[in-house]
Length: 192
Length: 339
Image (cartoon, rainbow over all chains, first blue to last red; front, side):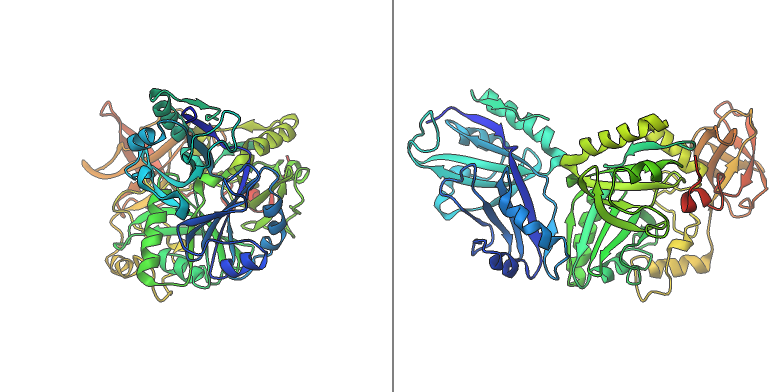
């Protein structure tokens, strides 16, 4: 297992889309969508740094997170500026975090009442819950052994991407970082 | 700010979007004003009442598209108003949805006689009156950042509320500051804002109103469209209209050298409590103390002399005055005055 760590996920661009025609419009743009609410899909296995993540938050509500360059979201933006009927872009300035490593479920058990350890990651669930009193979106993901890290990963190691409203970003980062530190991990670049 | 330009962070205001075919109807029902006839590209004041007709919030409602509105709430009321609108929308089953973007957007008020000239150098939005009149809303770029601009403000000068993505807030603030500093720009805070708004006679919900204040008492009938088929609080307002106000929010003014009373000091008339001061300040622009006070209806006449009891027990003379105290025709905000 890798060391417990919390890091701010800054280099990503985000967009929300709602409305009765959001699904059809995204599909027409060639974007793969999760079939069921509260699930996510990703353009790359393992949710890498360049991946486009699409989370379905409801029947007609989507959350998209692109890489830093945001090529996909930039491609969508001009159309969205035209106020398409039934397709409503939602500004998403969420703070994003990556949390993972040895003891990650000990941390989560202290800050949230969802039993993340029991979640089947292969079903790609999106969890909307409260964490330290803050409304968050959480995507659990499993990382295959030895992939994606110079330090090497244990088989099936669970990692989490977490987003919260920017209003609470600084508080959330500090509070979650404190718990991570108390559990022997480290938090890097989470403030400001 | 009155002479050149000022800049204040108003990002704490609640910021909500409602979209869909039923958006205008939701606002018509939830707010006392009418929004179904609001033109795209324009804004209108919004007054929210509870079912007993008491004022519970206010803000500015902008129509960006026939089916898309963007509106502000008070800072303290943002979460409550959003929850209440979600509840009402679920109850009424209207074809629309709400998004709370309070934390996702930064907002500034850039106001003062020089504001238009300075801002024009930073934006692709045409700011002249013909293209961007008072109370209009426009979308464009400010300092290269996508922005919504509303020609509204709390302080009574030509000015623009500038709303941008939260992540761009600092760079836009810095750009505005850099452009305005050579022209005398001064950042200002809530204390200064409260003086300026009081000079304009603008009420603050929760300070100049309390848990019993209705629009008739707060002189806010102009923001109420009683002819609408329905809005929350309408039935109660009809009853209250028939009964008549128990108190009226009025302007008060003090002699130039008079000590300032405190907010909540009582108005005494014939030995009995006849009202209370809700806001008071010294206005440098007017060189006298000014304020707002809730008064019994018999005292609520412009020019009437009243007495305010101070902490010492002394009775301070004051006079009921017409508000706004400053630029009563609102020409500075509507047309701009060259610096």
